Amino acid sequence: MRMEKKYIGGFVLFLLLLNFFAWKEVFALESPQILKVDFLDVGQGDAAFIETPEKHQILIDGGPTSAVLQKLADRMPFWDKEIDLVILTHPESDHMRGLFGVLQRYKVKYILWTGIVRTTSEFQKWVNVLDQKQKPKTGFLASINFGDIATKVVNADSKIKIKAGNVEIDILYPFENLAGKELKNTSNDTGVVAKLTYGKDSFIFTGDISSVAEKELVNSKENILSDVLKVAHHGSKYSTSDLFLQNANPKIAVISVGAKNTYGHPTPEVLQRLEKYDIKVLRTDQAGDINMVSDGNSIKIK
Image (cartoon, rainbow, N blue to C red; front, top):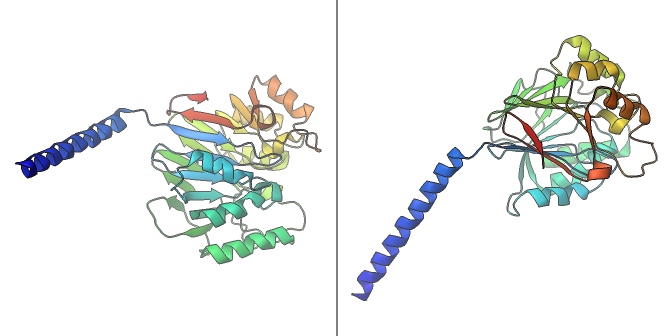
């Protein structure tokens, strides 16, 4: 008799659990599909973490220090050690250095960067890390689909479209594959420019490009129209031109910048231009992490 009660109790518990998970799936289907875009306060550098409604995770740049690791730990479950995509806009230390720790701690399915060649010791470290941790794929892919399992290193150009469920990321710049091209000076104007679109909402990430590259983008007729602009080069006066703002027409501008930095970023010229076009300005040196959510119809700042 006692054994029968034990089996009955176990069966009832099984049915309750089955019912719980069934309702959980129903609620998941009915709940709004939310995109999260977090501009991380990593000091004088750039890092943005994106989580799609389907829980794909994307990191754009890693900032100048290992601070990005704690930012990721705050956003990802402790057991989750996998990131779908890391984008390095360009191999300068304030965007690249934090990625060394990321590639050690996490398995990364895709790494997308330009493949340009620098002569700095830090660049060589980056190449060594890629050689050790990844198996590069030569050439470029026309698209990236997160259904793929293999880890790949992809050279960026404007032919690439990234699909993560209902979220799309178009690489708008550079226009051509720059892999193997050697640069002696800054790589800013070879950097990746990416536009993320989810439903009616859009975000554009401009790395550190100057007004020269901005003009090339405008003249190319690429669709740079976006709701949110990640301001180029931390608010340098040589970026975020009138021409670019007129064509991108953002409602919100995010400036990733370190407090009391020695560069004078963001410059008065850029702040004045943003004010002229009535663009809401958010700064990581003032607000810390800037967290946004989108349901595909509107963007909210958390």
